[in-house]
Image (tube, rainbow, N blue to C red; front, side):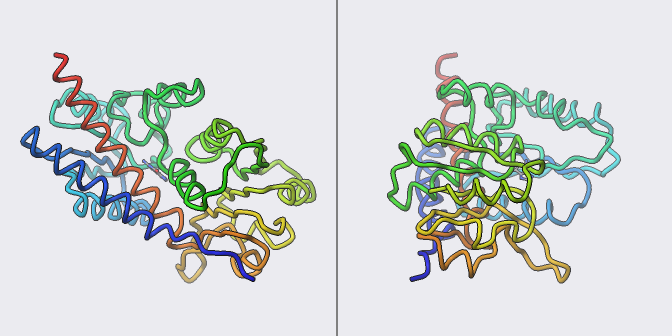
Length: 292
Ligand code: GUN
């Protein structure tokens, strides 16, 4: 029997509904909606699509999303002074800079300039450190958080399971490995320097296999143990512009117990988690104001 599909769109809608209620209650108490400011440099088409998705979701949830669209040749100093201004602005609850940034700008320096209390992407060192130390401060990055929610929706307990993450990026692979570890899985990270034969051998051990390599169809049926949970974080574009994941979907589905589709799997969950982090940022901000 083919594996069950984990429907990220449906799960994202239930999370958005919960965020919508929290945002409405916040608006009642504070007289304004939670606010999210999004900074985008240049006109990378994929980034534009992602940012549009964030604005649409904000509208559904009742988050006041503001755009700061800047030319691609904006200097790092100008970008940082915009961030400084938004950091100081008490009306701003959440602030993110869409990645990737143009080559002349240091992504790390820009992320470090964001106030940790507004870092709803969870990319700041403060957030990364809190995750590593198993603390509740900071924010968790949206994509790994969405993957964990999808896995939780299967009802499978991760304790003692073998989890394999393909990809070691700061925004997906590394934080996801830490979250899986926190859920008591035995975790392996593979990456671009893992030899292909070794990759297959390691993946075949996985009860939970997460592909975040950014490489179309890097996971084939040969990589998958029967009954595994397979999560596809890949967002690759084919030559004809179609979205395609890191997993060769149909043959892998034959072996998996659960699998996420692309599109309609991790993508909508990433946005739902951004909505959740933004509402959370607004609620924490409200508490901080009350403390004075
Ligand atoms: N680029 C790709 N994914 C993300 C994300 O989750 N947040 C931001 N800011 N940029 C991204």
